[in-house]
Length: 209
Image (tube, rainbow, N blue to C red; front, top):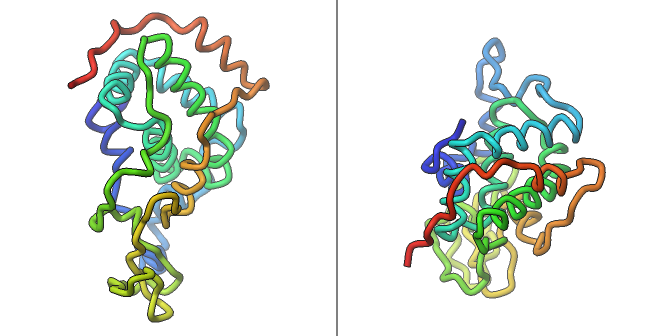
């Protein structure tokens, strides 16, 4: 199960594959995500993440990360992306599970006495080294665009796009997650019951000043 450092690494992960990388991979040794996923239903996927976040060490690591200010949606993005890369779920299920997993984390954090941050603060300073501020296309070459408006000059490049207050990130999955400001319960998954019956796995962590 993930440690706190791994949870935070998932949330801030930057070593994403470049466009077209799969075309150069050995077809006899496909990456896990290039095969059929292990989990194909919402219920199975929810149970997978419920078991993950109720495991004692993972629960403690996750709650500590949330107490230190790591946004819920950053953790959701990290664990879902990791599950996809490991061949556990497919991209469609990533989108389906995003809100339920976020709701689960919020419920568990509330039980632990943590006031969790849901999404990034739009007033955060723009970081040009954050790959979430880079825009990918189909070709796989990369260049940094110095235009004021952040638009790409050439077709077939990866260009940096300045993120200003109120604008969206270039990563489509992250953009979707950042739009979920108030995650809702999924009645089919009975998450409220899961949260209510979850064992008290840790004492309230102290948020760093």
